[in-house]
Image (tube, rainbow, N blue to C red; front, side, top):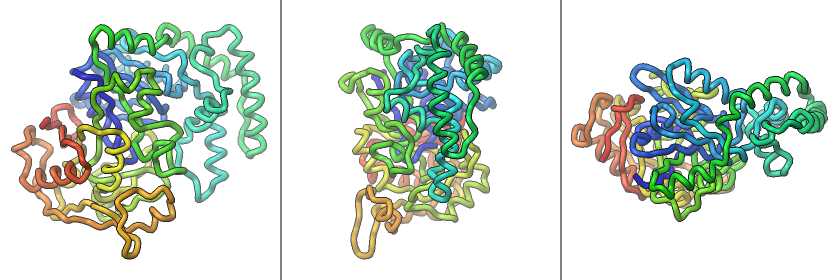
Length: 421
């Protein structure tokens, strides 16, 4: 199998974890390249549910090597807990996971700064997970952050002391609760000793794998419209969630990438603030009533709307998407009519792009193309021809309006609930 980047083509929560899990059997290594424990990738193996935040979904396959690369920000304590939880469920981790020495560390003062920032914004809050991801990336960009290799240094306590002191001054000014140095040192040094055998030069590891003919699968977190540069700013995350971020976040150059796969739901969702042009109470009530569309990380109900081809078409352009995987088709099984937004209108003006100005985007009215529903349970179907004709027509329209080849359809959370075209 080629070296493949897998990205979310909407606002995250597209079902990337399940698709990564399905594709893992065909690759040698799965690489997580950005984000932090704000991600929540849900995978079912049989009846067992796994929710992964930092560790690549490929870890659930016993022979596949997994890498947390340099572009990720890591809470070492949370990572140790995730490892221990997986091992309790019988998943082998130590021999299959490697962590970049260059990855930046998320610390308790980052979480407190995150919470302070959200409180101060009030009604204009972004809706972060408050896990300290933004402040950790801010330290990275301002060249003041601590990296995983710093955890292993004998002088880590002294390095941390200076950071805690500086951060507490800001936390006090923002009305937050200052953090205490001693317990942080103890907790993070314990985590460092647990992770020490896994921390390495992952750039060298990835290139060694490529040079010997191995294949890599890059696991994106969040979605294209949460990208710090190309998303609906400021309602975005703090990293590059698009395909280019997989290269900078791993040290693997673009000329070693063979394919980009975009994952998208058969409808649209997002969590937190910011415009969602196709948001619709009908589809939200339907999906929430089915117990669907609640965040794997926060448990928050996701906002829901009809499929937005303006969004996915632009995502295909930005990411260079070659193929698409459509998930959650079964969520629409009971509808007599389904819709696709083909473009927007403001007054009489037609828009084919996602406006950078959020006031403009909020004023956009979706223009829909309606399709007859299929009113059939698709969750037990295992091949393309077995899908109802109306479902196939709908999927073909999604691909055509997105401008990429339809390659996979997911009709449930289990591995075998996946149709390859």
